[in-house]
Amino acid sequence: MNKTIILILRIIVAVILIQTLRFKFTAHPDSVYIFTKVGLEPYGRIGIGILELISALLILIPKTIWAGALLSISIISGAVLMHLTILGIEINNDGGSLFYLAVTILFLSLIILWNQRKKIPFIQLFLKFK
Image 1: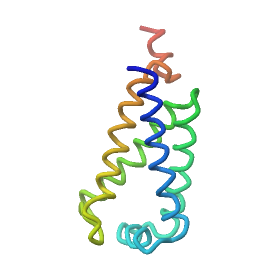
Image 2: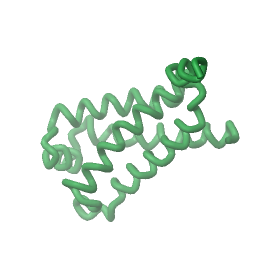
Image 3: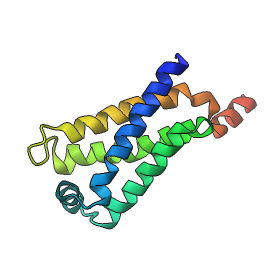
Image 4: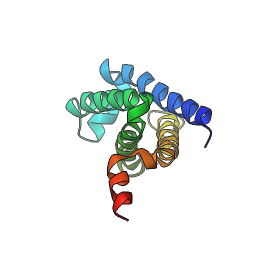
């Protein structure tokens, strides 16, 4: 896939992850509600916020794109699962925007990881023995 397109996808993922941090780190009522409902308030909210920040930074650094995408997929898969099982698609009349953002990040991160698959160290090691 075109390097420019992948760069744009990386920036989109990073921007979405970073812009949601202010809600987690400032204890916005919606964020507190979500994490209380899934039983992870306050440590889960702050911990996941830190992991999202790390993921956003890693996805922007050329040598760690794969790690950022993998971390993002791991975090956001949990978010999507929580929406589908405990929270529901719509939270506090948001029209499902948080769920759709999570699905967008998941989808874009999967594309980015697929694009970077040959740069993942343990995959390279496996391919050498093949």
